[in-house]
Length: 510
Image 1 (cartoon, rainbow, N blue to C red):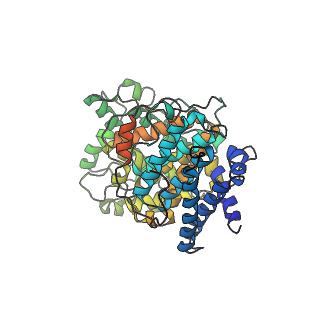
Image 2 (image 1 turned 120 degrees about the horizontal axis):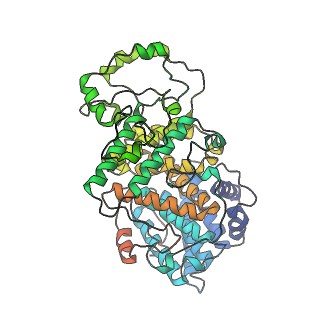
C-alpha cells in the first residue's frame, strides 16, 4: 500500500515527540501491531495519512475524501455488527474524532464525540478497554486536548463508567517536570540535569507558584483571595516583560551603562511602586509567607539569578505601546531614544537561548491572562501567537522531548488562541493541536497520574479564566465530577472556530 510509509512515520511521531521512540514505548509495542492486524484500523491509518498529505499539498484533497468515504463505510458496517463496541471499533472512532478535529467541522466533531461517549458507556466504561489501558489513554487525552483547544469542558466525563486509573507506579523522570504540578522538584534544583539556564528555572518556578495560587482558589473565593492572585500575577507579569528579550547572556548591561541610565519618570515610578520587583516591604495582600526570605521576589527567585537581568519600570497603562502588553519587550516610543544610548552595552557573545525566549514569552501570556482573568483566546494577539510558535519551533524536538512537561505547558496558550488566529486554516494550527495531543499522550503513557494532574490543572485554569470557579477534576484517574447531561449540553454547543474541508462522508456516530 503506497501510504504505509507515511503511516509508519506518523506512528513514530505519535509515540515520541522527536520521531525516535524507544522499543519499549507502549504505542510502538502494543498499538501499532494491533492496528496492522485490523483491516478497519489499517484503513483509518491510510485515511489519516492521506489527510496529512493533503494538508501539506502532496496529494489532492479529492484523494483524501475518497479515503474518508471508504473508511466511514467500513466503520458504519462495523458499528452495525455485534462488534460495535469492541476495542477495534472504539479505537477507530477515537482516531476519526482526532481527524475531524484537525480537518473537519465543529458539528461533526461533536457528533462523533457523542457517539464515542455512548460506545464507551455501553461497553462498560474506560476500565473495560484493552491494550493495557492504552485505548483509554488515547481517548481521554484526545478529549482533553480538544476541550483545551476550544476552551470548553471535556466531553468524556460524568459517571463511574468514565473513571480510569492506571495502577502502575513509576518513578517520575525529570523531563516530565511541569509548572502545572506544585509539589514536584523545583526547576532551580534540577536545572543542571535538564540543561537549562538558571533564568529559565526561575521563570518556571515563579509560574508554578502563580498557577498553584490560582488552582488553590475555592469555588467561591473572597475578594481578598482574588486580590492576592491579581497582585501576584501583576508583579510577575511586570518582571517577565522586563526580563531580557534575547536571553540572560546576551543583554547584560555593563556597570557603567547601568549607572548612566536615566531615572524613571515620576508617573512611571508611581505605577512601578504597585508591583515593583525591588520593593522589599511585605504586602498585606500577598501575606508574609510570600515575601519571606525573598526580599520582594516570588518564591523561586534567587538573588544571583535575578540580578543580571535588567528590570525597567512598568509603562503607563494608558500608553498603547506599553511593554505590559507586548511580548517582544520593545520599549514605547517615549523610551526608545533613551534606550538607544545603551545599545553599545549589548554583548552578544552567545547564540540565542530559544528555550529561555519560549518560556519567557509563554510566562508573559500566562501572567497576563491571570492578571486580567480573561481566556487566552481574548488576550493573545495574532502577532504574539505567531511569535511564540516560531520561537518554540526553533528548538529541536529532541530537546523539547527532554523538557516534555515544559513543552506541554508552553502549548496551552498557543492551542487556546489558535482557533482565533488566521493560521488555524492551514497546517500551522493543525500542528499546534497535534503537538498538544501528542505531548499529553506521551506524558500519560509514561506517568498517568502526573498526566491526570496536568490535564486537571489545564482545564481548571481555563475554567477560572473564563469567569467560573476552579473545580477539581480527575483527569481520567478517578470519578469525574461533571454531570453527564451537562457535558452533553456543552458538547453540543457550536463554536466560532474556523472550519476545515467539508465532510463528504457519512456520520460515523451521534
